[in-house]
Image (cartoon, rainbow, N blue to C red):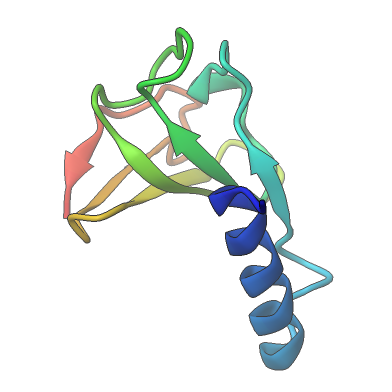
Amino acid sequence: KKKFSDAIAANISVVGGLIGIDKTVKYKGALPENADANTYREMGIWWLNSYVGSKSNFPSSTTGFFKVNSDGENNIFQLIECVPSGKIKKRCTLNTGAWQEWVDI
C-alpha cells in the first residue's frame, strides 16, 4: 500500500516537470520528527505533519505542504498550505535574518 506522502510526491514530480520547475523546486519528502523550521533556508517542498514528533518553530496543529523560497541570502520566505482546510500560513526574514511570526494569509 502506498503512503499518502509518496502519492503526493509523485504528483508534485509530474506537475513540476510539466510546468518546468522540476530542477529548481524539489519535493523532498516528509519533514523529520524533530524538524526545526528555522533551519530550512534553501528552496524546497516538504510534507509537514505537526502531530508527529516534536517540531520546533512551526505553527501548532498544522498539516500540509511546507515550502521555502530563498535568494540564498537573508531573504527567506516560508509558506504552509494547510490540508484539508486550504488555509495558508507564511513568515519570512526580509534582510534581517530574524524570523517574523507565522501569520494566516
